[in-house]
Length: 273
Image 1 (cartoon, rainbow, N blue to C red):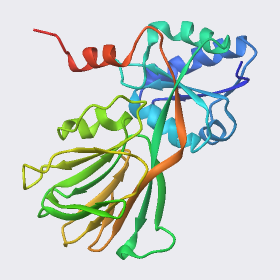
Image 2: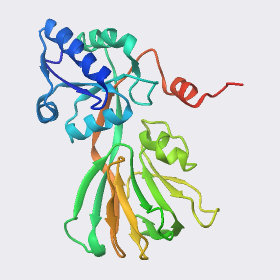
Image 3: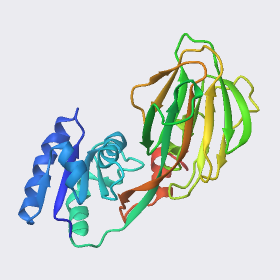
Image 4: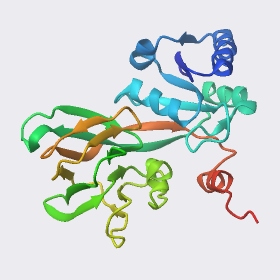
């Protein structure tokens, strides 16, 4: 039974903030220490309860960094790909977790290094993502030219609005909007999806996660690097973005009433006429 449970509500939702108080009261009634300060949640929690959507869950995963702490996602709106538990089943899910009857789904992360000017040595940015790293041009910029390699093998130079490098969990996020494939979320692999490529034969790829992917900006397009949807970092000609698998995993508490294909049918409306 977890003894210290962190609660992370969606910051812009009054309903989530109110629900957090009810969850805290319920957990304290079970003899559990409740953490609300985000620094303490990331450092000390044995379980994190997310009240919001997939974006809030990604935020909670970043708070935990590499700590293997389960995350229970309570969805406060429409069904999420990662926040599987509807609000109506919130207390049942908490009871299962407290009784040790829940299972978790381990999700891979990617480690992102930015090397300014393509230089070797320590990176200028060292971060991890659960969904994706996106290299994309500004609205008024000419298309980017992005030399891309997998391991030591040259792949191609994407002349495009950008490229998305995603985990299987991130396959249902921005990569899907760029016509990337849906990949079962517990698989190991990396998706490379060009954004609006100049050559339509440049299609999304799924590659093993045992090698690094390197993307080098080759022109003076106004390009940004965004990590899990956070504000973009500007890139300049010669900058190299290196993507490799992380050794840590995000552990998502599963809802036994749902499975991945059911979520796909609900979210993407498969089978509707």
